[in-house]
Image 1 (cartoon, one colour):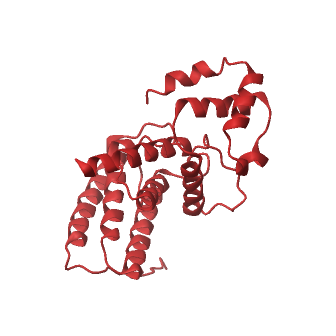
Image 2 (spheres, one colour; image 1 turned 30 degrees about the vertical axis):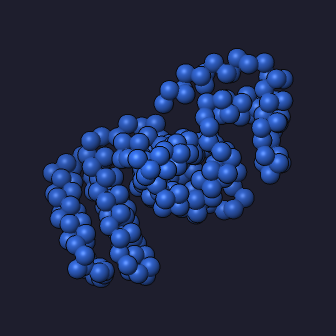
Image 3 (cartoon, chains in turn orange, cyan; image 1 turned 120 degrees about the vertical axis):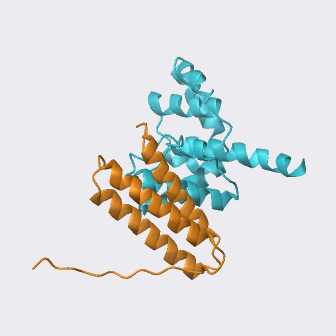
Length: 91
Length: 139
C-alpha cells in the first residue's frame, strides 16, 4: 500500500476482504476459521494477479459476487466453506 | 495526524542532545540495535516526541508484522519500517491490521486502517484506541 493513494475500487476490494476476515472470525471452530481464511485469501490474491486492473466491469462484477458470498457466509447457519480445484489443460 | 508537524521540527535539534535523550528513553532490550549515528538518534527522538506509543506496543506490533509477513526472526524492524518496504501488498496490510485488532482486542475504523503504513503509525493508533476503550465502556 505505502503512500500510494488507493482508488475507490481498490478500497472497496480491501473493505470486502476485511469483511470476509471479520466473518471468518465469527465462525466457531479454529479449524473452520483457518480454512475460510485460506480460501478467501487465496481467492483475492489469485484474482489480484489475474484480473487486469483496468477491467472495471469485471472487477465490479466480482465485487458484487463477493458481497453476495459474504452475506451468505455471515449467516449463522453457514458453518464452513470448502473449495475444490479443477485443473484444466489446454491440450 | 497532527503529530506530523512536530516531526519535521525535531530534526533541527542538536544531534548530541538527541542522542542522549534517546539513550535515556530506550528500554534496555533495544540497546543492541542502537546506532549512534546522527540520523538514527534524531529519528528516535522524533518518535518519542511525536507519539505516546509504548515500547511494548511497538514490540508487539513488530512481532505480529513479522509473523504475518513470514519474515525471519532476526529481520531488523524499526518503527519507521513501512509495510510496503517489507514486501506487503495492500491485502497483507489488511491482514496485519486484522491481526492487530484481534491481539489488542480493539476495533479499527476502516478509514484509519487504510492510513496505517508504518509500524509506528500502527502502534500509535493502537495505544490511542486502547486508552479510549475503557472510557467508552464505562460511559
